Image 1: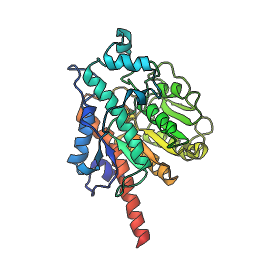
Image 2: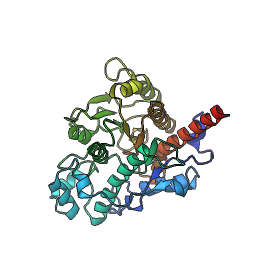
Image 3: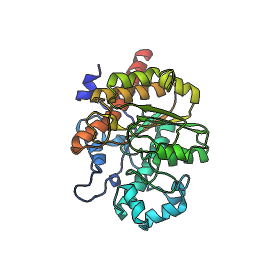
Image 4: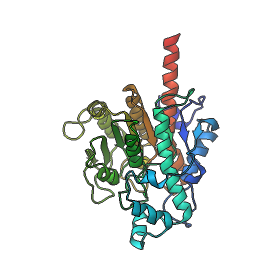
Length: 340
């Protein structure tokens, strides 16, 4: 039953690596619509509900360097953002006011997603293998020379390209289930066959221009739990043949970077779907279960999510972490039964 997990009944923590750094949060002007406090609240919620323990949390050792960012971003853009010399139009497009704290926050979050992938690929002893979850990430609207929609540097793209450059992986799948189209990711890998970009998104939502991903699945407003999960599991004949299992078999990735946007929720301020808490949990659990059943390391990021009540929003995002922890616990239980 999924209701126990969503409603928060207690289970002993499962040892899945989780990634967080205090620098994920930096002050914004009062009343700013970006819910910056949610990142710290996700970690606090996981600890306060005993879903996780402090020793499950890993922190990036340092913010992302210019060299790491330059795997996909233009050096001039990196320099201008880092030193606060972007013009007013570029700042307006970001949707976030520049500050030194924002620089630290942004580059630390990119480093956090790279660390999440590292932990999924090479899981420390004592932790559940092949799975790790960040408490931030999913900045898929960032392009090579500019940022957009609260996204400054594309953590998914930086992580994928840097791992390819280091020959850690040969093929990456970026599975983007945020309610918004992953336009930055699509453009950054338009000519790179070693990164397969897949975006399931609301067709009638930001961004206005949606450059083609390797696989785009535009969906109508009002998608319910049942409709969304059926499509994810089974696909259809026109846009997503056979669903996620089919996609994994076609792409054969060495790593899945999963953008688990919580903005598919019915109460999200910027999303137009009708998924409930249970539906979001089931989506995340299905993705994780399916990727791991195919023995593919899976690194998860939280993606978008917008609400005035930041505590509620943090709990909504934490459904991803619950799904990962429950997957690990159930896998361990099955392994114990098999060994008995």
